Amino acid sequence: MGPAGSAAARLASEMGLSVLCLEEHGTIGHPVQCAGLLSLAAFSECRVSERSVLNRVSGAEVIASRGSRLLIDAETTKAFVVDRGILDREMAEAAAEAGADIALKTAVYKLGAYTVVTRGATGHREFAYKMLIAADGPRSTIARLNGMERAPYFLAGIQADVMYDSDPRYVGIYPDASPDFFAWRIPISSRRSRIGLAGLRSVKERFSRFISMFPGPEVELVTGTIPLGVMPETYGHRTLYVGDAAGFAKPTSGGGVYTGVRSARHAALVAVDCVNAGAFDNVALSRYEQLWKHDIGRDLASGLAVFRMRQRIGPVEMDSLLKTLSDPAIIATICEYGDMDRPGRLIKELMKKPALYRLSPMLIRCGLGLFRESVS
Image 1: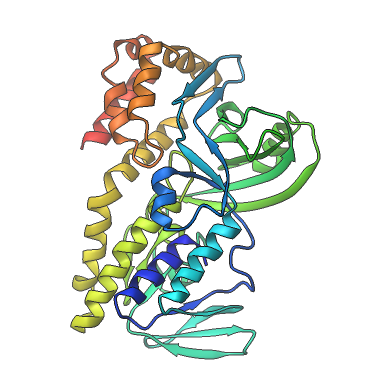
Image 2: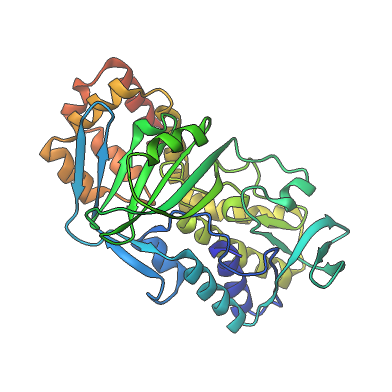
């Protein structure tokens, strides 16, 4: 039961619905399948205390394989490194306090006529529902059972906590370590970092090479799946799909907390309206898609354009790009307009910079296409 499911349950309960949360695992917040780097906006959306915060970061260093480095330092906290287990449990507790019931070790395996059939610690059970909010992750069982078309891309990711000394202010980004996405080093403290990598292919081999750059004992190893690109329809069959189940992870970073919780809030509002009006057809449900598209749709589209452009950038182009972005005026623009959750404004501002037009013709074509995508 992650942030999207807990947020939807909490809000729907606060607005008067009777809510039951079905969680297949025996412990909320485990297993952890997240890098745990949350923007200030994402953390605020979770409506939790700072108990889960392990570190505060102010910037990032992007390191290319050919030697170029780009350091961005906002000199103020831009993101939190969190313990996702603690954060997830606090959000679930808030949902329960709002009135939601939570059933652990209970997995859905079959859908009936407005019922879900489960198996788990209490055996096989059947629950009737008026509305279903599917927050069951990137491999959503509900989406599969309903025959829904899924996200267009799925990344595999591997991450390990490593005892490694580094500057705790900066996240490290290593684009060439995974040419179709990137690898990362997220400082938990000055002595410990999360070393991870995600991509479309050869992830295990790439990760083995990448982690060898960080000598030190490995504390914990986790794997996960990241869906990129929202499913063509995020509603149907009295069901609204939120978070990773719908493919709401940000294509620029793979993070899904901010967009997941935003989608959950819209889903809860529509669920309440549908139940109160007794209207469950697709016309009523489609309002959910209208709401999230108006809120985060353009940023998700811009991010997906960035991801597709990324597939065309090799080590030579990446080296050139980082050298160009190292211009002090461009760094100042990134610090001013950079937003982990909403990249559209930064894209527009960067495309106004003459220095970018000294890049290779391929990068210019990609950038112009990205600009058109971000303003369309």
